[in-house]
Length: 116
Image (cartoon, rainbow, N blue to C red; front, side):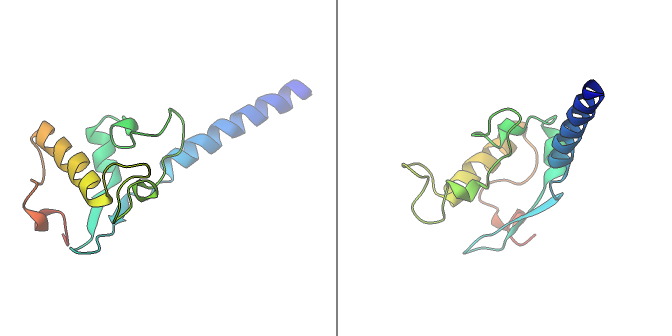
């Protein structure tokens, strides 16, 4: 009986993890204090990156839950302990990837992301 209960618990834990991974809202709104907000389609980007979450969530350990970017990259002073503020981090991460992949919006054409 204990083996069945332990097996059931293991299955439930796996289901809870899978549910957490797929529970991310598809459209995220990245707030901008100075320009229009950016609507980000999570599924479109994870499909393009073949599910390599760490490409964007660079501080998340395998199997971990990513934190909000702004937990480290705040709007004014930059990352805790130094580094990029939110605007610079998003522009570097997002525009850098779009440039590398030669797809999507281009840095400098603000309205392609902001307020779209």
